[in-house]
Length: 342
Image 1 (tube, rainbow, N blue to C red):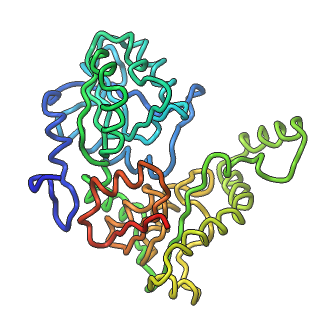
Image 2 (image 1 turned 90 degrees about the vertical axis):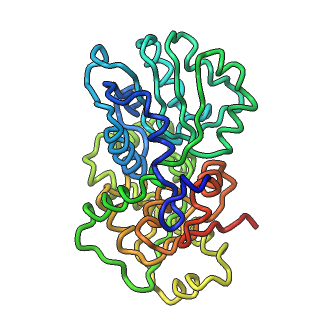
């Protein structure tokens, strides 16, 4: 990070993303939304926050969004952590890009990891160039070292910047505060949010049931109203979430927050507030706003909490996105520290 990119109190500035977008000032953009093949939103409450911050930055940089791609000068994809060959988003994105091969593409600051499949396949049928903004060095080095030649052959230019919630931390702070109006931190309270992976968050992780009954249960769950679904999912995941939270706290031996927690100061029940199946965006914002300390291995919780001035313990998980964003954008932020693998 250069001194010119260094913001107030150690946070990065928006200078990098604004420079990358300068060629597109005044352009009309069509956004390829983060949706699955059935049109359902992908991502979680942290992705929703990231999306709001990114749109505000892009629009201030002179980019106007349109709803009809025939009226657009460029294509834009929102920032995400879903550009991994183990996820469905790369395949979905490729299908949508096939339909719009002639418009330049801008991928907002994202992480990426393609261990087996060449990401150049995403852009292979396109005649227009792509600017791919990467939010941390580990993803950038991986793409350049492993796939650089084929990406360049597909007209892709990679640009290193920051996570938009880090560079746009003042915007993220304002969004959380306007959503959690009147919520103040409880003195000494600790919010603990452990990441629950896809396998752990599966209905199939419960008691064994037949395939037919499992399909019926899943179908009934998906068709239930949102409030009912949140209640079911909270009960289903509560015990696993509690154990995962305790594992995170066990990593903080000797930290004052652990002593406080042992005396019952806890800002939220055991749930992953970033998961929209469990918590609404308002729930997510209020839980973060109401905590004094935060212990998590979720960037989507750590970044807005740090932006609000909470003392944040970001627990390393070996996940390249987490350590990469911390090393790139958060090293000089005084109220967040990375708890290393032990």
